[in-house]
Length: 140
Image (cartoon, rainbow, N blue to C red; front, side, top):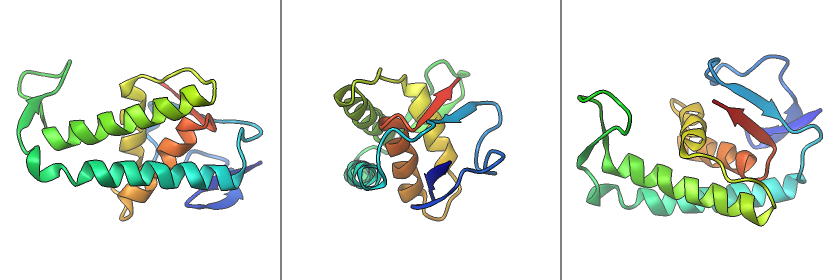
């Protein structure tokens, strides 16, 4: 089974990559639901949406309480804005493909998978694209 990973096709990993949080279940579509050119096109769309949203960072520096979090937990407004922009983009693509929309928490998991990578924006876009086309599913 081949999977788009790191922007190239490689064999599906036998174990979850080190960047995945093991508390979640990540499954790959078998076989992939879309071709490589489609995945790459959707990734570029997701990257463009993330890039546009990230340009708003300077306008959204306020700290906002984390919904469902402890009273002292806060996130910057720009983090929430970017996540919600990606959530809308993922669900728009999923609905266009006849897939069920996903919860915001699923997109947040995808976001966390990209955290720490030197190419964070590209990874976030890649993982969001794979989620959007139905090639990965994440169960909370």
